[in-house]
Length: 63
Image (tube, helix red, strand yellow):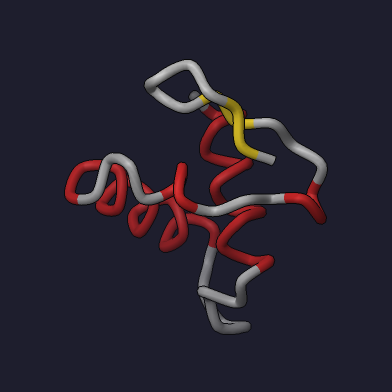
């Protein structure tokens, strides 16, 4: 799970979702809330620049 959270943090940092003062624990809380309320949200982002492949719930991959 921690690897998944760190991947989500990288995606959100890449799109400048956080400001410079956001702590790691605040990032974890934000990600937890996004996962609970918008479970497919992260699968809508393509992370070409971070070079990580994410598997969607349908078995497709996004980059």
